[in-house]
Length: 445
Image (cartoon, rainbow, N blue to C red):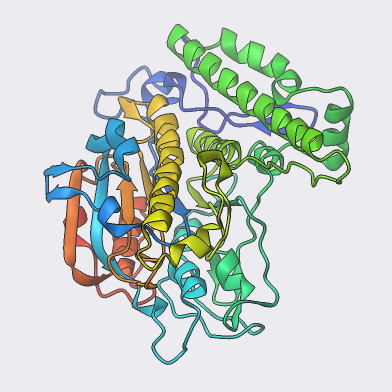
């Protein structure tokens, strides 16, 4: 029989601490020969990820057909077909504070600012003021339960000074996670730095030593890992082997991406860990979030695929113009066709993340079953800058608390903040209100 080990066991070596996935050896029944079947259930915390994309969608190609349990995925959402039974597509939610009212232009900045806060940003380029985001409401209540209360990731760096959209501070466009009304959470855009933060890789001196000798994280903890493998059963050994293989592959891909960037730009000093190719950059960040959830290093994560109003060119799928410029398509057929490609391409990367979560067993289910993954934008129709009927997908069952496999059409103009309150309830981190909330989203179940 395998020896019982703590859920907080770490593999250590040379100043590095590496978390572990949930193992059978960590369950109460493994720790007590007298445990009943009713108590032989491992702690299975709920995880929450929030993923933002800019500029809205082509709405007719996004919305499913049918309703309730009898519905069909739209063209843009077809990449989610393998996970249809584990997602809910939600329509009808709005961010009223994203609208102009008396503040004039700046819909993209407001769309990014309100995405997770549902609060109204003060129109200024210096004295920013917004509200606390849903991820940070959860993270503040979970502090101390995990190594990292939360992790904030992005594919574009943050600009917190200056004006980026019609007099709004760049901080509103560059950040979706806010610790307080005046403090956005800095996001990590380097896969290597995010990877090292996730694995508590120790001092700068220890990192330099590993780099000098070209040691991977697994090399450093090899002795500890070998001892652990001897003390667990075959099922846990297989799970650990899969986990170690995944970590090794992520580390190798980060290195290859860095080398490819340097080769492509030999005369340019490439920032540490920069990844030029969007698809690989996004997938590395998704993988890092999955590992963070798998090891319970963090239960809360955010990812910005681009800044609000971002103008990335997706040349790898034949889109040469910037995303933002295309979003003002004025119903021109060629531009709409390009935007459809972008919408589907981004959903394909999201599907990759769901596949990763679904591939990781946790108890009798999967990591996706234990998670809530919000995917969406703060604008619905980019051409008209609409902030109602937002494009929202919520994946995962939150440990059985959410009935999935539905197209949920909410009442018109329901505050998206109501969804946030329901998500916080299911995280075990309830709040009385957030942004312009008016209650819970009862349809979520």
